[in-house]
Image (cartoon, rainbow, N blue to C red; front, top):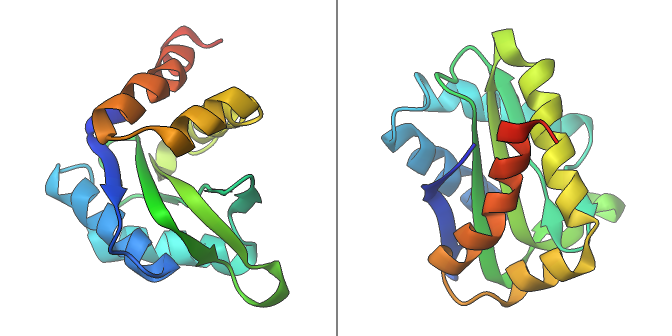
Length: 154
């Protein structure tokens, strides 16, 4: 689920690594991780397999690990595009959804989170609203449709 405390607007992050570390640190401070580095290793391993930049200015990095105490979705919007991925596959992103799921919930919860995020990201108005919102509170209001879908299973 997306918590208001995990919705960020940052203009000073310059790289994929900085974004991942900033978000993981915030998640860890909320007690959602038992081991920040172990979780980050799972995220980096996933990125090595295939970049999570999905187009439309969006990346969805995720890690499934026993280091995740409680499933979460964190959101980060940047004003400056961040190059996500390596080489020819790298894409510029401004909207980053970080997912963390305990290993024991990886099949059901992970798929539910990805499904809800993807369902809304195909909507051009939803993406535009997120790209144009002015602060984290406004973004959280838009993102609540994802929470509603997760809760309702729609």
